[in-house]
Length: 118
Image (tube, rainbow, N blue to C red; front, side, top):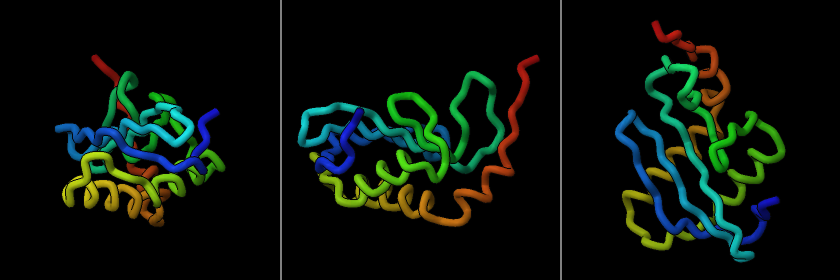
């Protein structure tokens, strides 16, 4: 089990060309390594094999909204250290955390449309 109360350092922040997804390659003070992904929240159509728009994944596993685990992840990221700190990475992370803490994060889920491949 990952200890999200142990100070988290983001070793790398990857941005994807899909409309806003980011992946955070993280490590905490207990040397536990993990990845957190914030999936884009601009395009609501997705295929079954894709990750759900507007959601958070931990090590490629979907995190249920407003669960204890999700709250721990978000709280841990509020005091995160960026290894290669730059203002753009900080802004991107701040925007994702702001979105997850908004009412829109919950209401946007009604916009999701699963597309069947033909």
